[in-house]
Amino acid sequence: MKVSEAMSRDVRVANPTESIEDVARMMADQDVGSLPVGEGDRLVGMVTDRDIVVRAVAAGRGPGTKVRDVMSGNVKYCFDDEEIEAVSRNMGNIQVRRLAVLNREKRLVGILSLGDVAVNAPQVAGHALGGVSRPAGDHNQRA
Image (cartoon, rainbow, N blue to C red; front, side, top):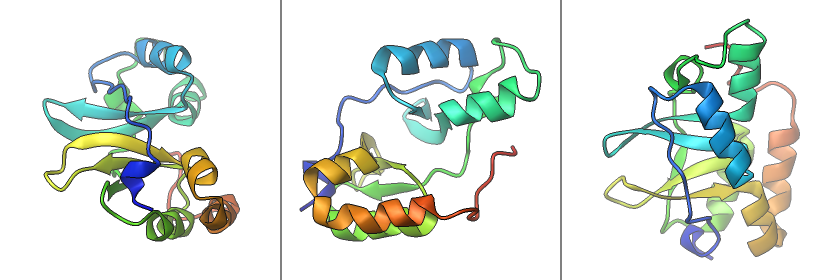
């Protein structure tokens, strides 16, 4: 199965100059925990509800804090024509719950979540979930 068959296509994109309050409201409206961050036609980051809590609220920053100050700039992504089995394994290895999905022209076309994998390819979801559930990893919540 290709990533394009399982991914979510209706993706809102945050702007790095938006406030975390506005982006948190977008997340609430969409019932999602992360949003890609775009500038012009380029993907420049990802912001999660956890980024807002740990990098902003816990650090005493206010609701007017800009997304660029809390987002993760090192965007992990996959391509829409990749096999979901390989991408799922990679999600577990790099310990991420969601990946931006790009086409080969590097334009954002969707988001692939562990939930998407579990619903559409349950036979491969276990590795990803096991990997994501491991403690630590090469990422942290410090900007």
